[in-house]
Length: 349
Image (cartoon, helix red, strand yellow):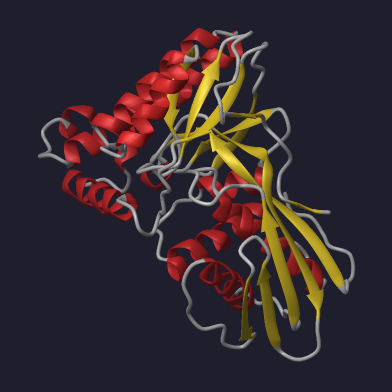
């Protein structure tokens, strides 16, 4: 999805959407399958050209600022790591960025599991590339660049799911992604009167500070023990001979891959009750085999089920964040729940 950019502009505004992952959790970095979609909530970034070779940044939502030289952004923590890493990775990729004043704000709650970080990265990249008058790269490659920001600058060993969903999403569709090949197909998300909602558990999660990196290390060790590059290609019988926790981590990956394809088939046939059951199965696997849940998440799942959800599961990296529920037609939204639907990809405004 490569596009071109108009000549360098003095001011560029870009929007990066958050994402909801319908199903396929912790499979991206294991060479597996997932089914995410971009949502209409996200982060808006504004880039203005300035004299000199510095970048000045304002995070409007928290009223904080940062400033650093283009040639050497240096290291920082929190939101500053995302901005500095994005500038550094664009420069490393060969883009000649001008001095700039950046500001950003968003309506994706941080730590909710809706991927505010990928939304920020996508918005910053598109705004800065527009400011430089640079041709936009292939969006899969841009997703890789954003992932390097997470991995190398923030310290979160995320895969490509969030960035691909934000950059390649499509209104009315989810994305079936095969992370072994980066094959991507659009899947119509026709809910036929049913409704997807998210409900914040109240437990904030952070990829860099939660058990996320630990789970990645456990998966890496299991793959090495099995002699495969990715757990998604492991033999199920060999998996069951692994010692725990590798056995349970690998078992989740294999069963979750199967649930992704089963969900696509259920959507195509309009079997939304089956989609709900698959969400429940995904949550049970994430809770029991992947051990990525916390009490607040379990209570939130029960709230959604009590409100009439056909299925509900934790979303994102786990250890907190939002829970996704599928409500039957006519069911009322529980207090605090937000309806979500596929929206457009990251774009300049």
